[in-house]
Image (cartoon, rainbow, N blue to C red; front, side, top):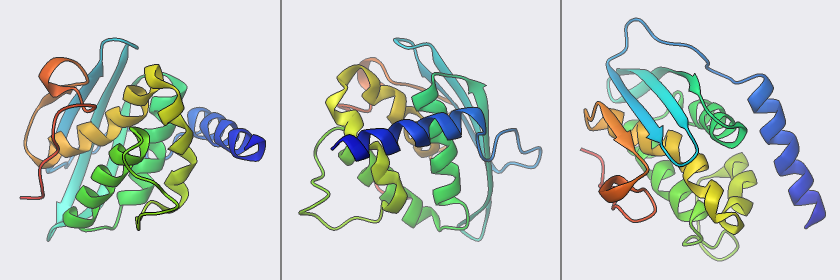
Length: 163
């Protein structure tokens, strides 16, 4: 357990200091803004789709270390994947972060993203980790702005299938 926590902390610090895919895509085909009013996180996500595959993806904004690390790892995980595969990762990440996915008992495609499994034990940080994923889902569905509060709360709102 201590090794898992240390790995989690190292990954968070690394991706917070050196976020991957940081910036904006000028030729984005999809974009969305994500807000977590509770923590103050604000992300802008842009991506370019080519034939239903994420060809390029970038994010920027002001956020806590957990949110930035989650966004950094998410962009790396979904780049080059189909929209359908990315939607699967969105749902699996959300389920893992909220404790609905038992990584030892249920099949999943999360790979290195399982480093965030411990966030489920930190209820105030779950929304921080989920915000980038919720924002990616919004971008896929042409929703310009999304939030982690009220009816848009990713802890409670259903995430639909790919369209």
